Amino acid sequence: MRIYLPATAADLSAPEISPRLAHAATQALARALPEEDEEGLEVSASLCAADSSLVLLAEPGNEAVSSRRVVIAADVEHGDVRELEAGDEVLPGTVELLVPVTWENVAALFVDEPEAQADVAAARAGDEEAFERAAEADLLWFDASERRAVAADIS
Image (cartoon, rainbow, N blue to C red; front, side):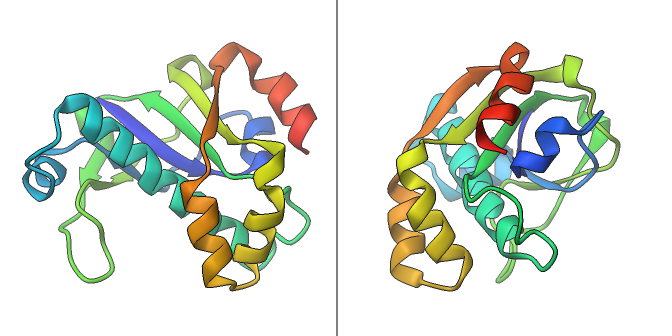
């Protein structure tokens, strides 16, 4: 199962990706977006993870972390995640990763372009318009083998 993990630049230097909430193209997401095909559901899950990355960046203790959103696409076993019931605070397709993910199971990285950094920084500080602009910005795709170079570039 492919999951999209919200992350920060600091996660790219970690020995593995720690358990956390993530997003996936689940049946609940398919029911919520019936007009989308599998590819569209994957894109939706990755965009939710990008928004969640911004939320991570706004958490206390992350002030020194680069203002660029990071999404880690990883392949895990179905038993490694638990799907959460959608509700007011939980989007359809939200899953809880129950075990750490090794870098060998990472398929790709998605990272904000440098030009998005100002909007991400403003959104971290609570600017709703900047959040909307950041949400519209495309993320760059990187192969998992480029992790260390990407970490050095955005840290």
